[in-house]
Length: 345
Image 1 (cartoon, rainbow, N blue to C red):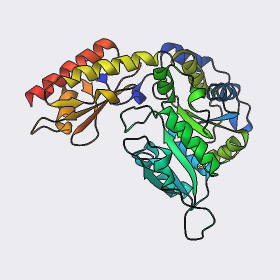
Image 2 (image 1 turned 60 degrees about the vertical axis):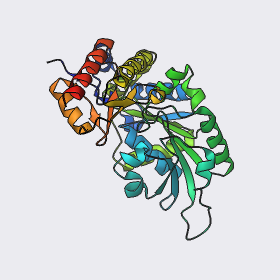
Image 3 (image 1 turned 90 degrees about the horizontal axis):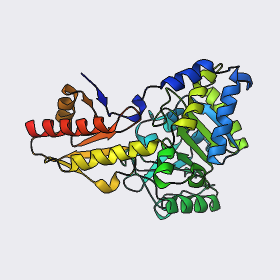
Image 4 (image 1 turned 90 degrees about the vertical axis):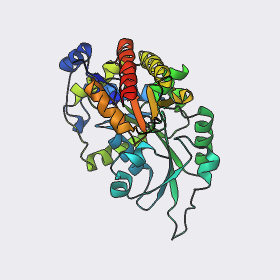
């Protein structure tokens, strides 16, 4: 049976060209800063984001964690969007390791400065955890892959800076946001103090993320990376995959977006399912199961029997994510499987 895996864009397999680049990579000891391939990846990431420096890390979770630690002190508060990945899916690391209080604002992933400002806590008051960081996520995972409105991003950055508050972007899929809008990543993140982006999602790498920011910030982040066990040695074999991805797998994200739109449109006409097409902006499709007596877990199980893998996020919501290992024909077949399962149950 052919498997169509729509659980996430993290399931991608490295291509033959990427594997060859990894095999051919020159390596050194990154603990001493002399792995040439890691250094090249970090330089390229800094260039693409318009930041002074960059740091290769094992995962987006690690990247966000060391960024929080580099911007804050234990006991500080961090403003973050509703259902942000850092709040939902990073093991409670902001509290358990960074020692900060996270305060959620907004609805559906995005928020405005007006919403954030209400939750800003002052510095210098002994019994109040001061707000020292505002975190954004673009695209927003739990929001359905939506793009954070750039006017709001720019205002949040400007107003936070004026208030002496740092800003960080969980840009795990920032290249999806850039391609969808026909803009450069450096334009989208210009006002932010730091940004993390993932190599292991739509860009198709087996592992890795990159943190970007000022040289001073990256210096702090490098120390915290070591503290949480992220110091690496001859990891140029992994960084080579990142360099390959940035050279070959960015523009092709538009195809993932087109496939997601096709899937969403086909699911939206299936009785028993509901899809908000306005929120299908990149490579994610969220479908609500509205048929009486049917829930998302049953639909997921039925699809699994037909070779289609998706994630049920709740009893009513299903997420499907397109990526480089999913083609148009796969999307059409997946939609047909959705219709079969929904109609039979």
